[in-house]
Image (cartoon, rainbow, N blue to C red; front, side, top):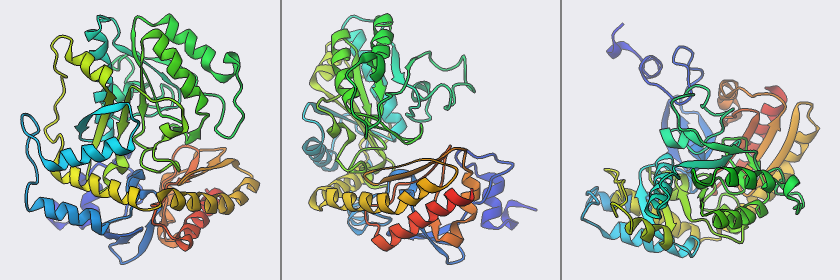
Length: 432
């Protein structure tokens, strides 16, 4: 049979490669014909709630009219132009807005293509800064286990070495330095004992490898793909002091946690300190187009500028794409004009109440909620394929990973729609 004779889904399964998928056993896949608000309309007319916010980015819902109108208007004027030697209002106006909402010390903005690329940029910044300061041996990184920072090459090297992809690419990835994840959970009392709060191990690792480590990178407060683990922000406050003592840059990866998802604008806002570099993506454009940015402080930016060659050695083709910039600005204006914190707090309260019965189920290890993140952690791995198979019946699209049945619903999700999501999660916890 020729490719022309295949149905759309048959062609997809025979020729298109989906993320984290075995091409010989692709599993249930749905053809989406339209999206609006929280709903995806499938090719048979069935509607399902996108309980994943399309991998955590579609916070204002699909086809948000304000975001799409901004993109339509920009498309008629300037869809794209190179950023080398040129600039434009969308990039400048977005920059002004970012400075309003991000930590005060982060004053330099580098636009890039995706969250994973923003991590690559951050790591290059750290290495180039250390070289400019005369520490040419500092080209490696420290991080915590159970972290995830993207699938591109350097970002992959600081993902968890056991649950990530290190074992597949051993010998090809850069060697990095791993310490146990912060042991004290967000809901627990802080223990001011380095032997019990993880900071003793961190100090030992950083002191032993100071001459090799350019930066310490981690997801603040919430580890996403590494297990939806929420840890105490005091770990970050004290890690900041330790990094300063040893001349190591502190990098926060807020790609998954930024823009209100945790109940604060950024997970950094749980802390009393600010990082040297921050990575932003996913929700930056409310999921309407791929875009990200890496922000840093004047110390790092001017340090790179004062070194050799004096220019930062990175420049994506689609850097500061005007369509992405106007989408991001419209999304951030929506976030700040609306009472986003109250909305997310209401989602959190409802999820806590409705997911609580999961604690009584025999194979449930934990139930936790932070902002618009709801997690049922199982004692066993949960099949995403099996969950997909129930999507039409439940009217909810959920994609578990590892041991976690979880949701990151769009902020526009109504109470009735959220009940449908939590009912679906409870069903998966009972049946899978």
